[in-house]
Length: 452
Image (cartoon, rainbow, N blue to C red; front, side, top):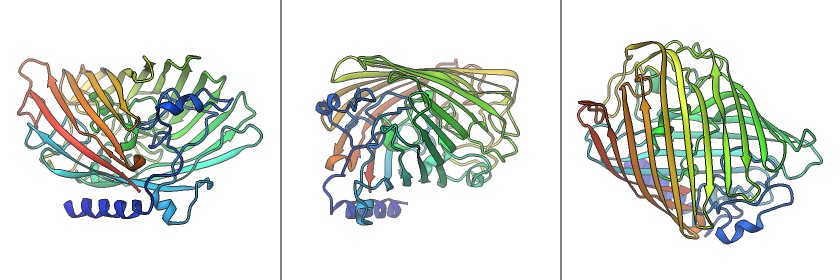
């Protein structure tokens, strides 16, 4: 695996050598306007970006944005293939290796994603093809698509049952492949102030965090994020009522499920996004999944209501706060069943039945301080109350506390994210860490994102 990581990084460095920095800017994928540029990003249709997306993951508050220009960069791979900034088609990707020095020896779970302690791993290698829509213009219908492929240990937290899912659900492999995003989009400008429709497989909308490395404030993920839905397959429509208010309605087959899976069940989605006129506050919340709510054939069918609040204290400091309530019926402790062999990094097998309704609540807060146009400090505190053990297999309250430093190099082509994190489980006598051998866990971790 070290050879694979080294080769991927050398490829990225080779592609990058012909271009000191990407052309354009990035929304959700760096780079984007620096702090001094945010006031100039208004286009007469959308509000100005509230945040500098370089060095932050995005310049926008959480939720759908209709009317803002696409800021996806032209990265070295597209340049090497002859693509220019004027092209609406994009091809790019990144590699993301990491190392976690942990007090645990076998597994970092219930910490998610960086589950293997004290080893160099490839979290994700990603290749993406896309055509972003132009939602700034209002005179014609437009279309787009996104096709994203991922390989690495992070596949464990994205795979959908019924779609190349056997390496995890039947084999419990450490590494795997996932076509994580596969959807088409349509933009109709004359419905209200703009309507967009997304059909296919997409990432769960309401979280501060996301599965793909560049979209996150820190390297590791909060407990709050680690045990809620990750991906859906279905349809999601967004309707802009004003520059400040957008609503979303959708339907999907359930979390981490495709419609043809035996575990699939119809669920609905409904959200409202509001942004203050001065851009200092934003709320995005609603129903992420609502249906029958019954655990289905060894797979979760999580129901979720959630809200996320963003607040800007000033040009250098902002925070994001998310809270949710999860439930389902007749679940198994620990959630979806992995039938493969027990491994040092992750267990397997079915948990005990939890009759009736099982519940979990969680909240996370991120506080960011801009240090320079290419760096910031992030402090994260979160708590997960797995009341009935449906998510982690343990009836306990967990907390995690993380501080990280994020630094971009070469115009955003490379991102370095060291952090320190402490986790604790509070139930009397419970040893929830390192496969039942520890009451708490301390991790010092770092990762590198190399774009190509």
